[in-house]
Image 1: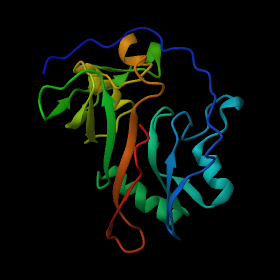
Image 2: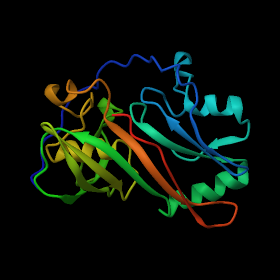
Image 3: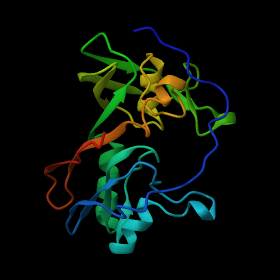
Image 4: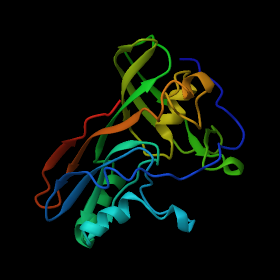
Length: 228
């Protein structure tokens, strides 16, 4: 599949206006793990500025004092976020992520119709430092990055896809889909105007998460329905 150039230059101005409702959506809670359905527009962790302090991590800790974040989602991405309860569970889950034992599936609406039923994007990524937090493809200095995609169906002029990241780079799914000419709808960083304006939010959602549970080492799988 032919690669397409990505938008260049500084990212759009950032105004933080996180959703207040629902304040916290708990998908699962036990003595070892917590799973939340993060809404689009909410940071996973606090930003540097004082006014960027509201985030899922702090909201979770207001109810579960021992909650420790294991991974992150982009502010504009919704869906499943996993936390460990206490240091031991957090370490166990973190090792699972490091060893790529955690399996994640995302749902996205992308611009246009993909011509093949499935495929793999294998393009190395690195931060576009002068324009951070934008990421870019760089074959000289980028880190290996792979994303599997599979068509779920067509919706009007666009395509619903399942995305399976084989690596976990920042903005990976967004950059990879834009690079093959099918940016995610509502993406203010990597989509052209038509695709960006086609949806009121980034149409990317972490739908399922499969991981080894700290209590017994057995695999557990959870889902959160996509909202678009």
